[in-house]
Image (cartoon, rainbow, N blue to C red; front, side):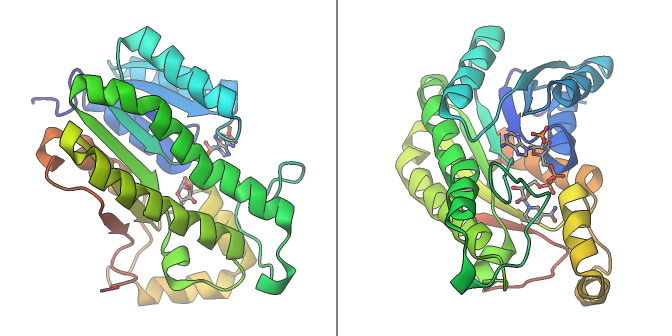
Length: 263
Ligand SMILES: NC(=O)c1ccc[n+]([C@@H]2O[C@H](COP(=O)([O-])OP(=O)(O)OC[C@H]3O[C@@H](n4cnc5c(N)ncnc54)[C@H](OP(=O)(O)O)[C@@H]3O)[C@@H](O)[C@H]2O)c1
């Protein structure tokens, strides 16, 4: 079968586990050369090896997306290794504070917002996405082919209670994406957003904090199940990154089994 991403070079952040890992594996299988990016060297190397063992090309790049110099260095290393850059998936997101990171959001009333959490959530969310986009832009423009996929959340769209910092950075990511989509379309670069609901470690942490809510949620999802990163996440990210999606930009893809059917 023809590989839809053959010859393309991709960076996937937060790819040591969860949705990012699933996308990195799917990109490798679709023929892309993949830089697997997360903070933990052992996990990025393990995912890169999984891709190579399956016949693909990949490197592991240890990078904290909240550190500007590490972001630009990760892009440089990818370009030097693979000779260009076409696809960036900004999937990593920090929670809590730098000194006390959390695996997911923790309820904090809006009026009690911790400003260190606000700063860290933004730096590892909207700002990190902007840094990767700035670093990648010249390479995508030169290639005449670019695909940026940024991760946001329906939590931001609906203003889910207790998630002030997270909601604000995720909606900033969507505004950043729409703006770049309008500016960069002329260069063959699309910028889209995925709002997922997929079972991952972050999701499990969120679920253990609100078990009744998540059980009830399953009944409310029209497809009556929670999504799986590999089965449900990888294929959409391959499609958006591929040549067949070149006429779609600035859009938010709701990967939630129909949980929210917002207009
Ligand atoms: N799961 C859902 O249902 C859901 C719902 C809405 C939105 N989302 C969004 O989807 C994205 C992925 O979520 P997930 O559920 O797959 O999360 P996850 O299972 O917790 O995985 C997060 C990944 O990001 C990496 N990471 C965390 N902080 C990082 C940093 N500062 N720099 C680099 N890498 C970092 C982690 O590895 P290291 O610890 O090794 O760095 C890990 O590989 C996030 O943007 C999240 O907000 C998820």
